[in-house]
Length: 310
Image 1 (cartoon, rainbow, N blue to C red):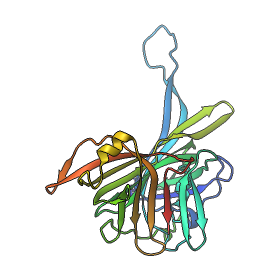
Image 2: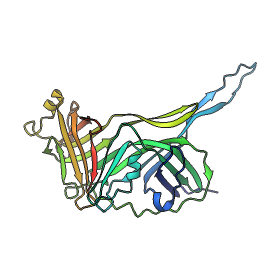
Image 3: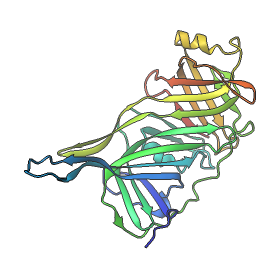
Image 4: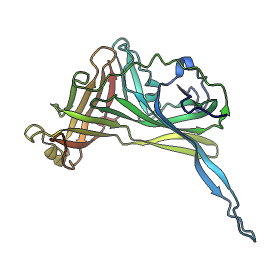
């Protein structure tokens, strides 16, 4: 019987015990995703390389099995200040700490130890693929006249797929996003200088490694190298000297604010960024623009960026 490709359901929940199903339900753990892809049996094929007196394939043995999932979620708040967004569970699975200030804000910032993990379930029709002990990385993107989103990539320990009736998802916690525009995205600055922005992305750059040994199997976040990529209108060096800043390796703050009403305002701040060597100009509609790359750098540690919802 054919499986309709659109019949997908995705659930995710933080694990209490690493690699143990914390009992996911469609009512509380459903994810409203886009552009979902799954690599359900990553790993290696170990050849046997037997010495026999004839030619022919000898077969191989699967090893190092893990599962990789990629998908997007829209970047929007919960609608209520001090309430975590529906994608907050995913943020905690990519090495971010969540700090909730009741009725005021929810903030996400990087951590370097004590990483949380997720248990994820994905149905394609009635076929259930599970990822246990999942950790990953993310990339937040805000492009002019587009829907802001976060692209997630998660790696989890392999679980044999099975035929199980799909959960019924409740997706009301995911709020409708705002298009990135002059009205909806009121602030973008580099070194406190307001700039006209075409595109912005913050890549968390987490290094994800399955560690599959005798006696222990897990997925690690073993390193992190964040990167910000921006395309903005070029300005005179008397306004913002990106060349001098890059040459002097001066650390500068970068900030973008998207959203205008309480519960829907998202601020991405990176207070100590190094501007990499500018590569030149590009033009759109006859206007000169800079493609800029910046590297957020820690100061006291785990403070190179924050994502704050108010």
